[in-house]
Image (cartoon, rainbow, N blue to C red; front, side, top):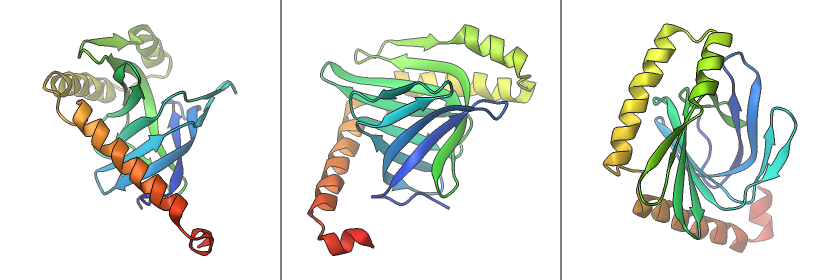
Length: 187
């Protein structure tokens, strides 16, 4: 099962122990196949596990893979495109939401292509507390290296051209959706 391009879905992140971590209440699907999903969050509510709610300030093109242990959120800001990468389980779609397990480690890539690895202490704490298996720790270590190489080489999606292409596609699809006759929208 895959999300349907042109439709909205929830995006949900869980922790290793099965507890809900975060939910984006609206992601507009641009692309979906057996290996990945691309969605845009634009002025979407985000609900944290503790009940806190916040509203996204800028559009973001989000990439979820069914075979990679990370996902990418590229935030389109006036000062440039910022990438936030969550090390997480491969994503799946269950008919309602794109879902994955968040493994704490994050990487922030700035417009000048410098990066910062975040939440190493949180990862160490949760790895012990929730008992991350050695196999998952090894996978995350390897995926971090792969990820950093892709970022350094500016491979898709880690370049402005890729993000701008998807954002233009989103705007075209949203414009076409707004232009549909009311009778077609109901179906």
